View 1 (cartoon, one colour):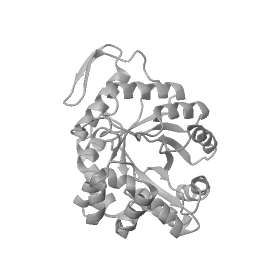
View 2: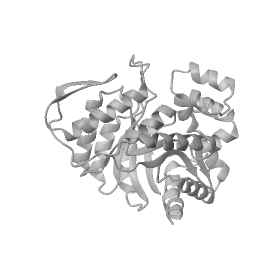
View 3: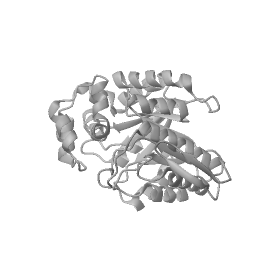
View 4: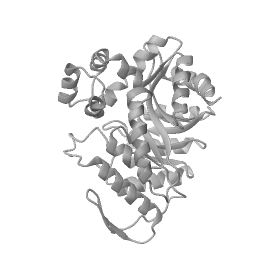
Amino acid sequence: MLFGLAFLGDDDSRGVVQWARDLERHEHLRRLWVADEQFLRDPWVQLGAIAAVTSRVSIGICVTDPYIRHPALTAAAAATLHELSGGRALLGLGAGSTGFHALGLTPRLPARAVTECIELCRRLWSESKAFSYQGQQIQFLNDCLDFKPPGPIPIYVAARGPKMLAVAARLGDVALIGSFAQGLGLDYALEHIHEAEKERNQALPALRKACWIYLSVSSDSAAAQRGAARGLALALRSSHKMLTEIGYTIPAEVLDFVEKSRHTWNAGEVDWVVARLPRALVEDLTVAGDPSQCVAKLRRLKERGIEEVAVLPFAPAGGNVRDMVELLFTTVAPAVAA
């Protein structure tokens, strides 16, 4: 199983770049991701800086959407990162969840928009002459990139819902399952991927499967579980309707709060939400506990055909996220690999 680590964009950029340079010494770290969350630090700026101080790990945005930026600009940014990093760039795409209201955007037909984004990006990366692309959601008129990336750029499609899972299976290089680590949600995602994979473009390489996971590990299992549960705030903001549709129970008061909130939740609000969620939902959408518990859960993911994880790290309650990441890559990741 390959391990990647994600930066959310909420930390000082200089500190993130220095940490990225230091993290590359861990042999089991294979990916570094920067999330595209409005209005935190700009991901493409941080990725360029990370490319300049690393030499081994792949680096990418995880994930951007087809609305905040025109997909042609995303294609150019990814190609530039590929060039700068010596062919180490990755492109993560998804429906997006932040910034739309503030920017006056109304996302429509996200599965269609991501499909068209993938098609346009791949043409821009490969075609040298001007062309036009007319989609339902995206248009590009009689132009091309003035340069080409040094080789193909792998596309990760992040998904929880059935339509986006189908896009991932049919067109992505990697289907990145959104934070399901076990149980009802993982079963649901794998079933939809398996079904849609029957329609996969045969010109593409074999589909790989990965999971985006909220993770915390500590010798204090309870502290780790409290820490990782904070990641569920991110899942609920974008996917609360889908989670209820597939069978998870979310209290009415939590759903009401999620529907009405327009702002980023503060720490007190996150704790309030997490305290009211059923244990099954927390367990299925996090990897948390002491090292042996995390190893066991990740091994079960591996047995289900998950080849890679993109970890969004959370400090255990009362702990430090950097110490937690050290424990992950010195103890947990080697054990899973073995």
